[in-house]
Amino acid sequence: MTFYLLLSVCMTFLSVSSQELEDFCQPSDVLWLWTGALTSRSISFKFGLREGYTCADSDFILYAFPELLEGEKAHSAIATCRGVDGGEEGYGEKRSASSFEIPNVKECNLLNLPHSDRKYRYELTLLRSGETIRSGSFTTPKTEGSSFDYRVAFGSCADELSDPKVFEQIKKEHALLFIHTGDLHYHNLAVNDVAAFRDGYDSILTSPAGKAMLEMDVPFAYMWDDHDFGPDNSDSTAPGRNASVQVYREFVPHYPLVGGRSRTNTIHQAFTIGRVRYILTDLRSARTPNTAPAAPTKTVLGKKQKAWFKSELVRATSDPDIRLIIWVNTMPWLDNERKWGHFVHEQQELVNFIKANGLNKWVPIVIMSGDAHMLAVDDGSHSPGNLITLHAAALGRPGSIKGGPYSHGAFPGPGQYAVMDVTDEGGKNGRVCLYYRGMNIYKGMLVEFNTCHPERTPALTPYYPPPIPVRIMLRMFKKAKRYTGVAAFVIAAVIVFLVYRSKRLRPVDTKKHS
Image (cartoon, rainbow, N blue to C red):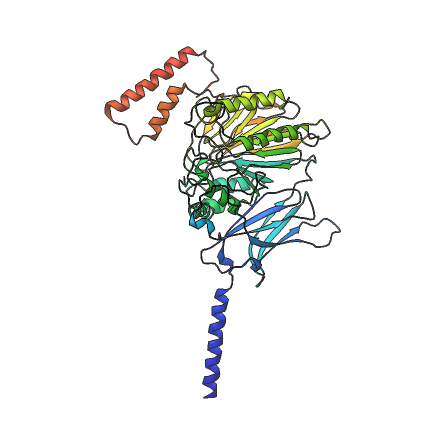
């Protein structure tokens, strides 16, 4: 009798212990980990948890172990983890019910790393059991304003169905930083529902393509474009505008948002690596609709962000520790029909400002763009303001060409990204040079450009866009589901006639292609 009583007690204890164990936070509760906001002494981590998780902030701890130099003793940096900040309610903001719900996201910020210019191994750990949930590595740059060489990769435009191989290839480039220039996903959300935007991030980050993207093991700087901000060609009137801002703040390991905590602000940000100032502008959340009449008040940037952008250009140019400015401008700068072509007054305002303040001379301004599903380069010879323009897309979407002309050509297609080697000549007046390579995972390098030595990368196949009517018809043809009979023949005949007529009106150049 005593034996059976003891056995019953033991079984009850084991059952209770097993149930308690299941109630504890488990490694499987963590779905993804995203790194970003890299500086010489800091980096941010955000990670997503499954629905119904039982994890508390105190369940996690993050360690960073630097590679040791000869004679150094083992040491590490430690960060505790906490809930994320979705910003504060703006004046007149209409909130969805889900905006009050706590997101399934935590963040851990390493803010006082012991070394710059050092490789670290990190481990996200369950404090109770000591189990490592995620691990990887990152390298801190030299102190801001210091001269050193490094590599950046960038690209845009992918979705859950994209080929993961493009991210596997980018990982092999061993970049210090990856800059994502928009269209992280294509959910095209036109609803004021925070839950829908959270699902959008979770969907891409847990997909095969998203997992491969995070497994590149490189910190991000990310600025949205239209499809990940809202619907196609979205602007400040998008129904989910503030919901999108809230979820960006929650999910993305971003640099400080200088516009403030209000969700009615834009998400513009800037940072410095070496002697390069990176300026990321938000071209969606303060944008006037494309269809609004042309007027000086029609804006991409919005009044507040535009004033900040201008001051950033002036401040960076006058800073003796900055020798190059990279403007992350997510849509084509060269486009007389769409994109910046919808905002010719504001574009000219910026060009006039650059000229009036003597900018883009001793400290060059280089544009980094996405949106158009192509690799493309313009050396400044066709660009408003003579700004060098570097495009890289599409990571995973079908190819397309937008804008132009492009001095070094335009190459549409999926599986594309860019590698940019940053080389600093050193010294007070030494230049910071960029060597851009536009890569296709199936075809290799398609285009290259050296900002300091353009003679080494001459223009071989310039691209000139067809006339605007032809572009419109080509887009109509592409979007149409099918053409039959006479209608197809008539449209094709009109396109051929317009192309033929445009070629007769333009001098022949055997190097041009379109």
